[in-house]
Length: 172
Ligand SMILES: C[S@@+](CC[C@H](N)C(=O)[O-])C[C@H]1O[C@@H](n2cnc3c(N)ncnc32)[C@H](O)[C@@H]1O
Image 1 (cartoon, helix red, strand yellow):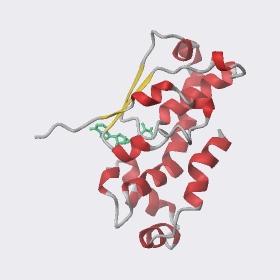
Image 2: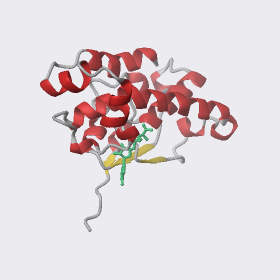
Image 3: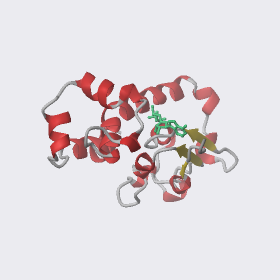
Image 4: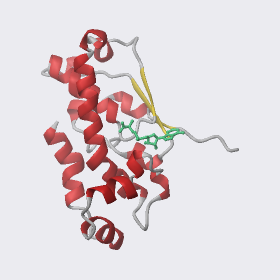
């Protein structure tokens, strides 16, 4: 999991191109509360709106750097504590579908993958983890994260990632 986050989040964050908004909001303002409270609004940010020149994709990367990793770790703990409830069904059965409303950058899917891979390993491709996972989110930028076959490590690549949908807000 450490290697996964290094590849998907931490290195892209460290090596982000030095755009003027990234310089002023991240590099020259290296305060965690500024990043988590002002920019991410404690997780309630609408990624699509951007922030002072930061793009939706920038906001998603900042979210992944601070909050996704925290949520994956706590979700993993929940799965471990409630292991008798989760068993192996989610990873092996065609009958169980996980629907994740407000899925963000596949946070819960990554936690499920981490948990089930830890239980069973993945030596044989035939035994590949098969999560049936549908993620819904209003943000196109956040849904793009982790949805690229070229970047998602094969250990957690699932056909289910293809089923993630953009949840459009109804017009009022
Ligand atoms: C705090 S983030 C949580 C993301 C993910 N579940 C996690 O634990 O990292 C909230 C997510 O809900 C999405 N969201 C907020 N309101 C929504 C709505 N009305 N419909 C769909 N998604 C929504 C946001 O775009 C964001 O990705």
